[in-house]
Length: 236
Image 1 (tube, one colour):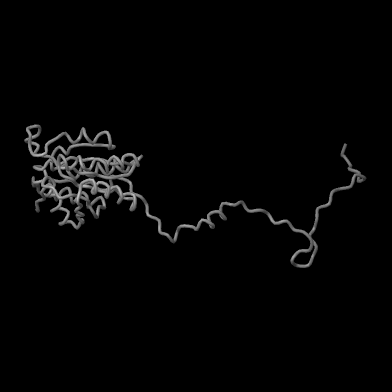
Image 2: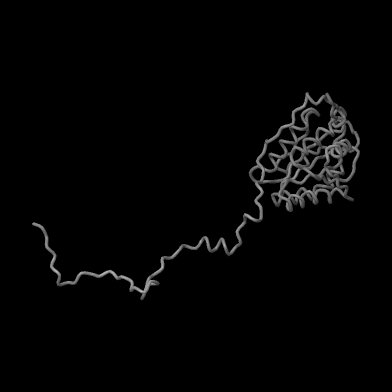
């Protein structure tokens, strides 16, 4: 049975959600995710600034109708992405931002770029959470997509400690949820009516009034009203 490291688990979960591109600025805390994305065929778009990555994920969602994904490193990497996330929050745009974090074993001990990312992101996301263990990474990715796209859409945030991304598990120990969210149904252009067709279909049909001669040359029959002089017999 093959083994998957945490970054590959995350990438496989993203692939299951239909993700084809992620936007990022390369950072050490999230490096295993890049390895996993290359393995499963997800394109890694490396930008010049994390703010660009978050705006690109927002724009991807606006254009395609599918959630965009930005992956940024810990600390200043995430704070640089805040503007793009806040823009998506105000516009109800579904996107997932994955932020790196120092090793969980060194939490609150001053590890490189360690800070409280979840509290930072809560006011500008529908949901912000830290993955509790590497084995459940796919479950939390699936949960994040479901929350981002259900009801009023919006951005969500997942924090992933770097030591979790290097942890390895046998594939039979892992669960990759599928079908956990509804998806937008695509309609082909050929099935869409032109605006004029829709307007014509919406108009009520009026009955044609016959006047004069009919198409067969015979005059149209007109109903006659009984004259006032006609006596009406009433049975007694």
